[in-house]
Image (cartoon, rainbow, N blue to C red; front, side, top):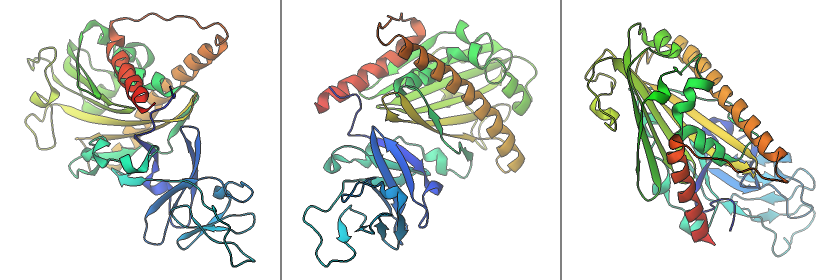
Length: 356
């Protein structure tokens, strides 16, 4: 059985990372890719290898709609077909490299890493909030490259009890693990909801929301196979009346919404395996307060990136310790809060097995 799910969309880059005069090398699922735009702005994703002497094509340059190898000048179109060999009129048979389907949606560049005829746009996460003018959106740029297996990050994003320990100085409080989670599942999605009732605000909530007294706070995490995760968090003054398992839509504050006393923001997370033990982490956050304040963009983004760097440090140390014991793997135990992450692991394993 393979290690990765091939028939899926993976975030390869932010839309601004690839321009008509700037190509990008990025490895996904152990496959080195080169991304470039043609003159119409359309993205191509090709194998990062010239079929002649295997120089990475990312060492070449884009000329109009053509990617030119930087060694002997062979030219490739957006489908990976070699269309010109300098110094001769005949292009040798079989002179082509692999190409992959590409989409641009929600400010991401997505690449379908499996069978091209199975590429299905409906399998993307629904992140319309990235394009909603009523929300202020800030991209995490550049993406993090993390020395860990991607499923460790899936676990992290579905277990938000760690906020009480890893993020106690920004988005966490010591009371988070005291409140139960409610988990629901569909065929390819896991959802986790936790309400943290009548509790002190986390430092970030106090700073940016102006909360002094206790709050009712929600954590809503939704993860799709293989590794898209939407974390929706926010709060209201204590006493909103929510019960465990209630959906945030029943209480949440949307722009121009039902209760201007609270606030809410999304973290949209695309986890892209680079290799077995390295991962690209793309994230964006959108908020429904101070939408037109560039200073808030900068300050809020800086605080969240600092929090996510704490996750990166934890995951890197976790992977390093696992690698240290690779010759004699140690068993780990599971606790209640692992339920959503374990459910997603099973879904991913089943999807990979179905491809075999």
